[in-house]
Image (cartoon, rainbow over all chains, first blue to last red; front, side):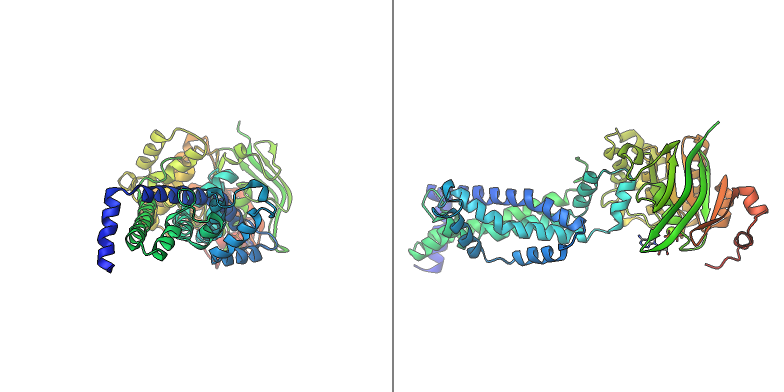
Length: 234
Length: 240
Ligand SMILES: Nc1ncnc2c1ncn2[C@@H]1O[C@H](COP(=O)(O)OP(=O)(O)O)[C@@H](O)[C@H]1O
Ligand SMILES: [Mg+2]
């Protein structure tokens, strides 16, 4: 099969709505969306807390987080696998080879990216602004919120980096999900499988969808940031 | 008869073992404009931060409208005082966003107030402009308007007209005077400009190396200073 032939077949597959493909896309969005949401809910506050306070060991913690930004996903997958395997400490959950296991692994992969880049973003905000916000009458929580809004470009970059780090990730998804058709098969693991089986058209179609999804999410979030009256809502 | 907005007694502020402010006694009367003058590093901005309850005194006590203040004070009380910092920072948004911000913090309705301030400060044309794109004078006017937005009981001004064009200086001085005339807001004005202190203030205090070396009503301060260093300052001989 030629390269061009597989492109054409891929387009046909997408247009005719091959049901298995749509199921894979749906699961990918579900798993990656949940993982990103969890890493945001935990990572942004943790990043803010680290960026805005001073305590012994802070520098070490930041270094650990920054190192975590380059954590090999397959290593995270391995660790999660060991925790969730039948004899592991969390084996009782029976999560191995289910979407929750994949969500846990991906959330862990995205967390240092989200927290670390949130810290970097907040450190770009003028340190004197904090005192001025307090002088204008901001409570502690209002100060943190306003600083995150000031650093919104960085926070957005944090979310996009987290998203990019997990949507296309194969190693952990494969290890803890198992690539079970209709259950834990996501775009990245499906691409590997279909390519191995010589189903190039399907693999290319999925690759195209993966790129499209990544582009769409980036465009959406960046567009949101550029909206002129972004901050008028409370 | 109005009372004191602030009474400071034995107030000191120490940074890294160095005492940068030491006020044996100082009162700010309700509704007045108190000018604080003195060379760079004499503790003027530090005094304003203490009056704004942004940091604790190292020793001594501050009484605010008859109430002894423990640091940190309750939020409601801190919200009565706002400051225009020596180097103000606007939030990254439009001019309108900046003026609405203190009102939003207090969950106050802001439409009419913000429009009123825009008009009063000659900023209507810039209402939707990004705060990042303002000239120095416009920037400073927005900072003052923002500090006034939530009707503070006390307004602290840290060199609000330093390095400004004459138009903005006149506008800001006019606003300070109209706030004084309305009589509901006490103002403490840090300035380098002897003539500005003379034009605006009811009373003047002079700080030197953290000590109050002279305090008195404006006429007295300028016509008949007790301390020779104040006399030098008044004659414009003080070197900064
Ligand atoms: N946060 C701080 N930490 C350490 N030193 C400070 C701090 N703020 C001010 N100072 C020092 O306190 C002294 C008084 O400063 P400041 O109140 O800003 O004076 P002024 O406003 O009269 O120029 C200066 O020597 C300054 O370096
Ligand atoms: Mg100063």
